[in-house]
Length: 392
Image 1 (tube, rainbow, N blue to C red):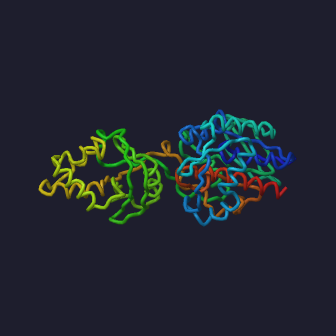
Image 2: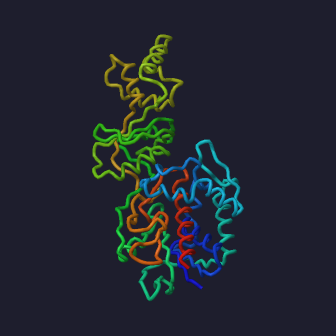
Image 3: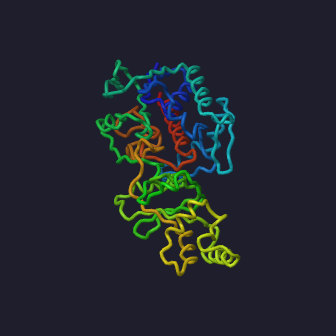
């Protein structure tokens, strides 16, 4: 029997164990998980509905598209759907490509994964923290808070630092094993702004959001923005945050919201002028177009009262906020940074140590929101398992 120890029971680790158990019964597979159960982060994905993948996935949904490109050929959306269908899962996909279990229940999905792990006789050790890994004769000695394990093959799949309330010590272990850590930041997280937004707290608006630094537009996203008392949130802001947190200098950064992206400035001005002609005052022309608190904020920002409608038009196309920070890793959906991808093969094996693999969010790979990060977890787990099977 080949002893395979998987450090971490998140999405990538579960998939690696599950797939390897199906490939051969010649592997003694053990998952070591620090928390009191495996799959905890799976339970909160997609607001508890579990956004598994995305129909429109491409390499450009990730920070290292050139690395992802060949991997998506090995495990595409169609392959993902087919794989989970064979496990007994029924898919449903929404109009923007996000795919969920038909039950829309992350718990029901995790129950299915647990069923297959049990069927594959995968050993699961919870409340088990790995504190060191030492290369040994033809394998690795894995030291935990409880006991030591010998591994012919070791897979690091402990996830990133996002959304957990403890330190992920795997980074330190891998550094000790000669791997480089790309600096870690929060990804897919709300952006804190200078402006006081207490009166807008909870308001949602559809907009085209631009991230701007020193008058240069860095990226543009379309979708829903949610206001918090001290920050901007929502899917499009999350995606802007991953660009923001990678900036070496974070001064003079703004989020600009185009509240009517389907209309030109002239079309908006004509609309407002027409409403004023019909009897609305300057302060009333936006009634019926936006939430009343958005209207209040726009009117409150007018500086030149003599050219009211022109200024209002400009504000609608450039509703601007000054970014001062992002929320912390505890609030983040994904970790930016991690193990340098130049130090692994496209089969996720370490270039420094044979039969040592690094998968999932531990790596310096992160995707947009919408199922892309979970897809990478499944992909890395399956490709890793396939390579272990071929080697033994």
